[in-house]
Length: 388
Image (tube, rainbow, N blue to C red; front, side, top):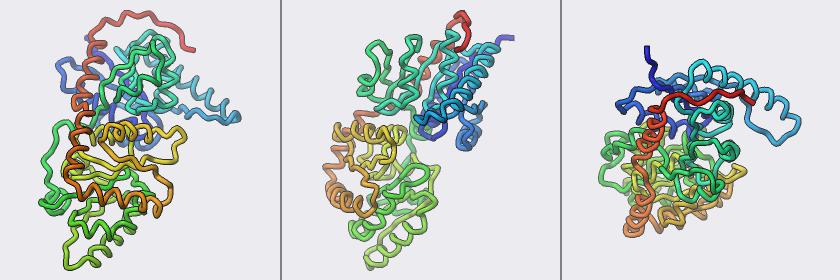
């Protein structure tokens, strides 16, 4: 019995590493060539939860993230070798048509083993500045290609690397954009302009604190608010908006505070302005829905990946970039005048919307799927070599 071509994704540990890959998987499922998909992931709970909901086979690896602390190198190398050997055995028992690194430390061993075996390998690189794992893997001359979200990423790889600017795959809901029914989905007022605040899946403490300070200012604008605060700050944020609503009576100030929402496409489509972190997946979604945004990149990452992402939109006139000071009150001082300006200027927001749409790749998942299917249609004839 002939087996379907086997496509392996490798990576995980965060939603930013999982969701773009899942967008590609969804595009693969809609094609005429049936393929089998497996995800070699981390042992973190988010991987099992997200991949389980997607109906994907998950193979957790015990590999450790690289560390700059020398006393931890022996453990890192021991787990690395075990994971590479495990992947080599799996890929020898059943040869994948292609292996795709989705980012994060868990992508290293499967992609490394696949390259040693002569299996076609690609990397998903949605961040403007490549991460450590992708930078290391991209040095290999036998890497088939790197899928980048923006052209600026090319300068961070060698001139010999095959960098394919294909955008960042978004979740299926963003590829078939829903109608903006904020009243039905979130209990808000249909005709009001809406400010959406989101700090990714866990919320963002310094953004939440800034909006708590700005609640009275926002309540007086005539806009309404949808704030996805994360679990830890939800009650404090809710209380701040409740006080602001009371202070601005008799004017009605509609607001909704949620810890998180599975209806992000609906929330973004219904928004007129977005305040957000600057993860690569979030920005891809903002680009697809074509919304103006104020971006406060996550300030605690050593390589400032989110800052470099936000800079792409800022330089295109598609967003306003604010450096998160790590202090909620200081953030409020910086954010307040910018919100007042943008919320009061329809023309400026319209210009930003046009600019952000020009950066979008709505068919990113389909385009990447085409490359992978082209590999899947080739005969599995490459020689097998030993891992190292």
